Image (tube, rainbow, N blue to C red; front, side):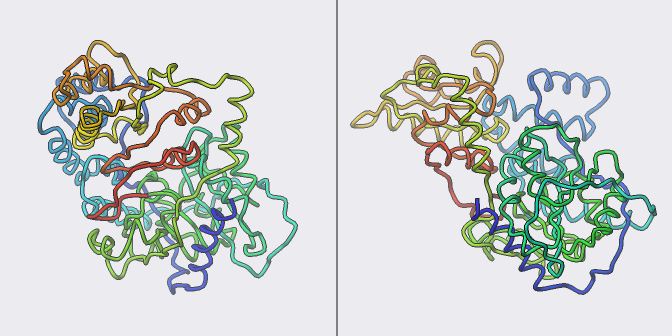
Length: 475
């Protein structure tokens, strides 16, 4: 927990120690056309069918194409084609350029980091231009947070953390609370949470607020009112916790320049956001964003510079993991491998990433590994365990995965059904409990594990990944 706090403290302190000279610039932004994909859906098969029907009736608008692409990836339709990855990447690149797919979402579709950064810059430029068109004196409401200070630090900087998502279901709330609670209050005059979502009353939300002196509730406020509230608190360092993964509202707030120093990438992807004069620093580390990758992504010299924190900029919340583990033990019995369709003596290779992160290239590589182990000398009984909610029959992502694997495995469909095992949806305690049955976790290629990587670590499961060699897109 202390290590997580050091990561955020270092970034904020470094930024505070090297001030820029445009801190009195005040901007007011209007709408920013960042575009968006659908949030998680219960039935992506139905979403895909509905999109196709809508396009047949009313034309293939960019928004319909974007949602259809997300549904296509979430149902593994690309596994039915030889060129599924290339087709998805081509469509995604066009939609990113049009602003219908946000940069962060495009990472799982193979779009280059440079292309994503270019779209991010355009989004910011639009927000900056719109900033000159509105004016308001209203403020978003604020209230006391849950931190109970033992020490005041009136001469120290004030830091605020801006996020559109602070609900129990969002990954950010699974990672951030320990870091906020462990921040050294003697180093900060004020620790502020700025959130754009409703308070869902979850334990995660309570813990996020517990680490803060002040909470700005922006759910019903305009972006201008939120920026005014941040400015009224005399915030010195504002940390955008999402970067490319954030909403257009976050971009609008940042474009108004409500704080003296503005930092991007508290937990988002460490790619450049652009917006000269809006972001001052990007939080990253030497592994995910070394100098050669920053150059490859078109990180311009006059843009924000990187604050490379030691080890990793990713944080986790050990207290949340402990609570989920305790809740599971109090209400449920431990599961066995058999409960999940796994053999006790098999080597279990697992990928529990959401289906849209899985591309054909990764899937084929995993199946080849299974084949080589199972049919090698000596033979090693191996199973591939994938997160794939849905049915084992009919037209589903599971049947598409089985059909593609059958083309590689010597035993065809029969062996595919024996070696591929599918996991469905579970609540978070059950999800964490079942992970321990894996021997090795396999990472996705273009859009790697974020919160899930921390889940594997907590479960004691090693993760096999590969360093990105083209541009900064990983955490």
